[in-house]
Structure formats: C-alpha cells, structure tokens
Image 1 (cartoon, rainbow, N blue to C red):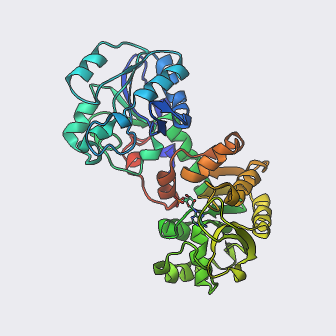
Image 2: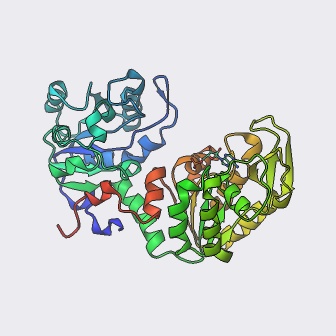
Image 3: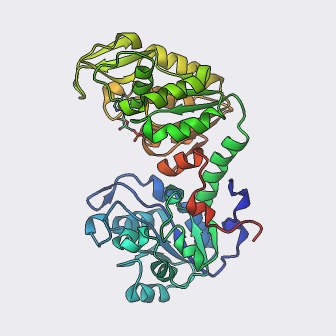
Length: 396
Ligand code: AMP
C-alpha cells in the first residue's frame, strides 16, 4: 500500500530527459489571481529537482469543472504566472494540453525549461480516461511523474491512462503523502486517534468502519455528530441530520463502544447565520427550534485531553460551521491542540480541515497536511487509488 513498493523520482534517471508531470494545480482563483498557492508550492520540490537535472518539464493539471470545453474562467494561465514567480524563471503557458501548436511549443524547449499545459478538463476525454487522448498527452516524454495525490483517487487520462505509454513514477509530494498516510495506518505509534468531522456521516461511513478497527479513539464532531446524537435518542432540533443513516449510526455506535466519542455539549443557534442568537447547551438540552453548529467548551476540553495523550493523530473534517466566526471555536481548538503536541505524528486530511489549519497559520506545526481531501479519505478507507496503482512497482 505504501510507496515503498512504488518507484519514485529517486529511482529513475531523468537527467536531460523530457518528462510529463501530473500536478494538482486546482487552486482557488479570484478572476486572474491565485488566492491560495499552497498546492503550487507543494509541487515545487519535484519541479525544482527536474529543472536541476536539466529535464524538459511538461506540467499538466485540471482546474475546476469546465465541463469538457475551453472556458477562460478555468484557464491555468494565472497559475503559470504564480509558478513563474515562485521558480524565478519563465513558465511557458500552452494554449491547450494536446494538439499541434502545443507539440511545437514543447519541441522548441530545451533542458531546464518548464511548460504548463492548459486545463486537462477542457477535453471530455480526460475524465473518460480516453486512451488516444492519453497517448497525445504524453508528448513524447520519456517519463511520467505523478505528483497529484489529490487526483489519485480518479482513473483519468492524466492519472492512469498515460501510464500505458510511458514509465510512471511518484513525485516527491506523492511519495510524502503516501509515506505519511501509509505509515500511520500500517505502524501507528499508540495511542492512535482519529478525529472526524464535516457535514455528513454518509460521506464517511466507510472511513469510520475502517478506522474503528485500527484506532484507539475516534472523536466525532461537525454536522455528522448530529446523526449519531439522534441515533442515541437525543433531541437535535433543526440540526443538519441524515435520518436515512440512523440505523448505520446505531450500528457504528455499537461497534465503536468506548472508542467512539461524541460531543457532550454544543453551541446552538436560532438560525443558520453568522449573526444568529446562540446558546451553549448540554447535548440533552437542544431546543427544538435551534440547531447545533459547533462543539461546546466541555467537549473541547475532553477532546483536547484525548489529543494530548495521543502519539498518532489523523484529522479530517471541521468540528463546526467554521466558515462563520461564532461557530469556529471547536475546529480551531482542535487545530491548536494538534499544533501544540510535541513528539506526536499529526496528519491533517485535505479539504476543509487543511484550510482551517492554513487559516490559523498552523500548517507548519503539523507533521503533514495532506493536499488531497477525497484522495486521503479513500486512502484511509483502505482503497487502492487508481493513480497510485498505475505507478511502476519497485520490483519492475
Ligand atoms: P465536509 O465537506 O463533509 O468535510 O463538510 C464540511 C462542511 O461541514 C463545512 O462547510 C462546515 O460548515 C459544515 N459543518 C460542520 N459542522 C456543521 C454543523 N454542525 N451543521 C451544519 N454544517 C456543518
């Protein structure tokens, strides 16, 4: 499962070669400005290594959902601009990801040059994993480097299809992601704690089932806690809930026993709004017209104590509606508790929990902040990621 079995950039000789690199440059944009360049910076070690080895570097990525046709709103051009600032060198932006003019642009480049192909999802063939499209995408490269962990759970032309035409290995970011997640699951130093939050239980049933067999404690927060609370018979008022998952929640509670921890007090609001009236109540006292939007202080204290005692922690999903300041306390308290841990391995799954950690300026104090939300969840579920499975094995 871990990369140890997969070849990485260290295992191949890329000196002076043409290489195709799948990166995850799916960044947030405001018009033509990149508002968060975390994912671009995360790919720099691989790109810089290739430049230092005089490779001709062809980068490809998707951005947003342009639905299979060109749409300037989803152009990677602003990313080329930001990347070129970070690298201190020209990044040659292509008008498309396949085709004659792109081939000519690449043919005119030499050792150490960097080309960024235009959004892969301008073509429906990308997500359809079309073989002919994948072949064209390779552009005669001698190696394919996959550094897009965030897209590895999808079998697309640029993550799986291309590997039929060119030797494929993991980039440094991919290697780091797989090593952290792989090691945590295979040999966790104990106590091993998982913290799961976010909106829905239904998204996380498989990961809860899997983690319950591995962790010492599983702390639940966010909207998904409500379904568990209701399954235990509590009144949860107007809170977000998945009534069709109550049986599943009951079964997970039975299986989890003492391991599975739920909020004991919560912040409730009279409406789903930043300026709502709020109250702090015990979980047994949620008023019928109100809704649960954050953890309460006693829960935060209990969760903090568990976090302090742990040696390995995996966190995925916010503890409340952290986008609104009055309901962000639980999420930020967990972020701080993880950041303050010395001598423990702290892994933050991608998506909203990673965003919260970045916002709080605590990313540097985590052992690892994953760049892939969906991919890290699927990895934790124990699934084989198609983009990883397609990479060359060490034994090849
Ligand atoms: P997910 O995409 O499943 O990780 O869920 C993230 C979203 O869950 C965030 O936008 C949060 O605002 C939302 N969320 C967290 N706690 C609650 C809650 N108690 N009620 C409603 N939404 C919540």
